[in-house]
Image (cartoon, rainbow, N blue to C red):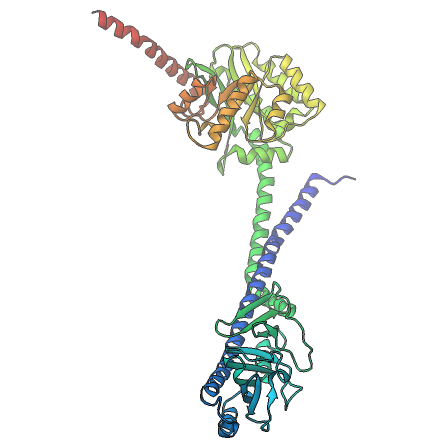
Length: 539
């Protein structure tokens, strides 16, 4: 058994309200993920900078010691400088040992016996070069199983001083900065950027730099720190952000759900108000005059539906027309418009064969009863002043490609009804619509008319539309004409008719006749001016 309309409406209302309530969550999810990544990147950057600064401080002590040794003790016998080297190694922090180098051989140690040791026996570099050099080593002579960092200062090739820094200091810095495994920290040293290995770790290349890795290179030493945020830390940031946003998110969900429900209820209520408004005669038609641009004469009107709600006041057509279409009220509303137009015909006092434009919906045209509705209007118009009925179809909704729609248009064309494409160029497939409808009139949208005579892109489109209409032998009506310059521009390019505030605002039926009389009087006065001037000149 099919569901009743109210039940369907309630289900739709509940579904839309639920979606509206959850909408802030869907919007905030990517925001939270992005914010968590940014926070992780900031934390990693700060951590990398702190570790790099600590490494620079350690290397600075080693540089100072090796420079001092190279300047004061090099080339002197080991017996003469041994005590000073030992004292410097003991009193200064971080050092495992210090040594002096001649011909790439360490000939004097701070802690080892006085033996000469080739540099390649303790260092992968194997030789000392001028300037400061930093190299990670797997161990030293007395402590071969614990990595160290060799800091060498050379005054010439093969000559200088060397300091071995215990890598444990760097491990302690890494451990403290990693904060119980929240970050993966890698220290790269030397001109080849070799990674500082953990005890027992074999030689390996540096880890690849990923999206979550922050790199902090030293500007003064051969050192670089890479900090990668691990996934569980990013998840922790995300949870913290969720907690921070939670109060706002709950309020946003409740507000969006409330507004969605109100919007749905408003549309449902508006549909009911449309039905009620038709019964209570709240709708009326305003008629905008159409002017022959060549002669300036009155050519007809376009009927515009207006609604004055008893409590909400005037409601714009672009608000209530979509509601009528969505709630299957458009055919009933169009029939109501037809009835209003027929009732206004006597008060309009139109001249014979004036054009009366009425807007119709593409959905209504595709209905089997559309022709009956129009023919009922034509019968009501019979017996009075003959007029030309023009049905205007807006391009904003696609015309259904159906046999019923084509048959309806063909039958009404045989009855003398004219067809117009409204808002041309702003909606669905204009050329296809012209071919399908076989229109008599093409109405140029105000958006293009407003650009007449300017350098705007829409002005180029306006020229193209006018050229197309001439080639297809379509009569043109320009909407929204607001200035004399626009009117003259359109007339000079062969546009036949115009409507807009420059000529007149939409008028009630009772006011149109008075406006027409004033228009005719102005035209007669313009025609009489040359004759008066001529008689004055003869006198």
